[in-house]
Image (cartoon, rainbow, N blue to C red; front, side, top):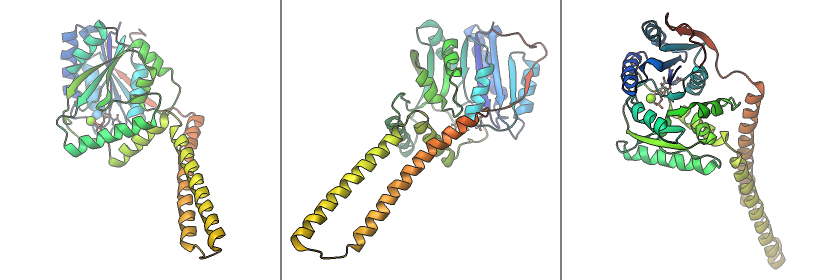
Length: 320
Ligand code: UDP
Ligand code: MG
């Protein structure tokens, strides 16, 4: 039986995997789950030696399973692949770059085991962040939470969490392809506990995120959960119509009092450009939703597994 599965999406992480593995081993020993631990390393199409390092770890430690995806599918897909393969009674998800300190699992796992909570999320405090950076993230979370109605996403909460089997099963039962895990884990609910930790720099290599991918991630977050942006547009349209009516009334009164005075060239241009802007925006937002429907309807898998690598002794222990 596997007590704890640790799922680790890895994209070009050759520099940290060995240390991560060693530290996870120590944590498991401390928790008394050293013999019922499973480490699922998902190689998300890395272009460096991540696969070789992972393979070596699997060869020397039967608790390591390596899932090699056929190409880079992105972190969300890599996490999903790992979660589907995890067999543990409790499941941890963490980054490979040591930004999620493995030692924190001790308190997270203990909290999960000893209290009523079914999920434990790690929350990074922003004490060490530069001022601008922390203000920006705060703004981001306010924006996202303003747009999302059903779930709340907490500042500093990332993808570092430990959940119980029922929570994971609930999550895996969600059929959607376009995944935004932070929100989905919050959407499934269940009593949730939080453990705080100090921010750490990357162990090695560099972050795969660019400003552009972060922005896109934010848009995904806002659109994945509801149709509130559509409603906002409706409000905007409503106000535009009201303003137009008011203006028309004003013109009419002017006409009745003074007759036709000027041709109103500037207003015409202003109204046309303003309204077409609103329309373009509206079409864009609707297009986003239509695009998502298209993605879901195509029903392509989120990832493809090229190879599952286990150590010699680790030959298929069977489910559960
Ligand atoms: N990751 C991945 N596929 C990707 C990009 C990232 O599996 O396409 C993994 C990466 O190896 C790491 C985690 O996702 O374990 C977080 O990535 P990163 O450190 O680049 O993001 P950040 O910490 O800056 O949010
Ligand atoms: Mg990182």
